[in-house]
Image 1 (cartoon, rainbow, N blue to C red):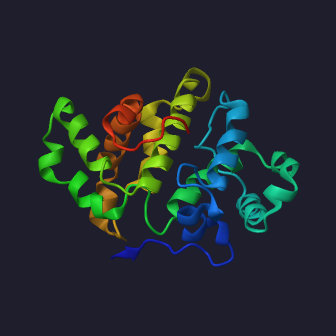
Image 2: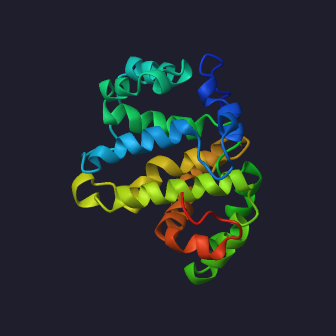
Length: 218
């Protein structure tokens, strides 16, 4: 049975393509405000065990989405601290899952998951991934760099939060590397997707040296 990737709920326009692609008239060299705000909040306690793994109450997550949707993150930024960090991490993941076009566009899914790629050595795979990531749209590239930088900070505290690069990849990779339509095959391929994202994350510090027009600062 096939299942189409979910369309972002109409009640949460902050999570729709508009806020990602247009950034509310922000520069292409900047990341979506939702992502930046949540990442900065999560950074206040990167030692929190279970970060990105512990699920919040469903209503709390809905309320946090509504907080961004109604623009209260602009008019009442202090309100964000009423939400748990586990909720912020969950909504951070949700943002990427609900993007109509994945962070790494779905047109690259079959390329990255091809049998030929799976047979590559890690030494050969790194420049291959760089070549593919070089082709993604600039706005995706900027956000990818931001995400990798953020998760590098998370992993740096893995002795406390238990979120190693491998664990981050297990819980996050499927949100950013996914096909246009979910299938049984794509579900079975999730371990391979995680391994690819882990390799991207572990080598994150090298991508800006390999990619064209990558921002020097995020």
